Length: 145
Picture 1: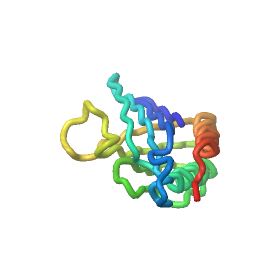
Picture 2 (picture 1 turned 60 degrees about the horizontal axis):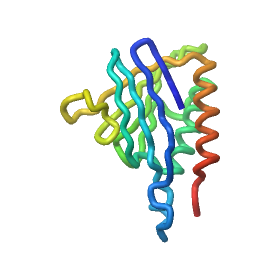
Picture 3 (picture 1 turned 180 degrees about the vertical axis):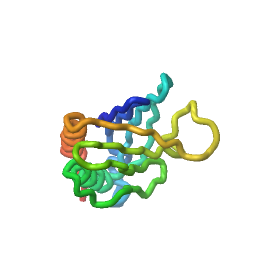
């Protein structure tokens, strides 16, 4: 999933399940995620288990609701506080998102311990492309019983 804006870009790719053979439901559904960020000519790639399969489903539903301009919630947070999303969209195709990057997802050039908030402003075509990419990734890494 890739989202861009005038100041930077964000890309999220699921690499694999963290624990492929665990007997525990929760452990079997953690995902290893690659997060690529670009902000003011600085780039960073971080890889960490920051999302679960069911959180990926939530992200997909949330992104669809933003695209349909009937957002489920202005913010989306997850169990791991390393990643979060919020919308500041004004409607009529004006998509403005803010991506929270904390702890394991925070860009390496960001000093301190406070989260970094990356602004992105995808157009409708890019937002739909990001949703389709999330759908493909979820098909590759579905929730496991």
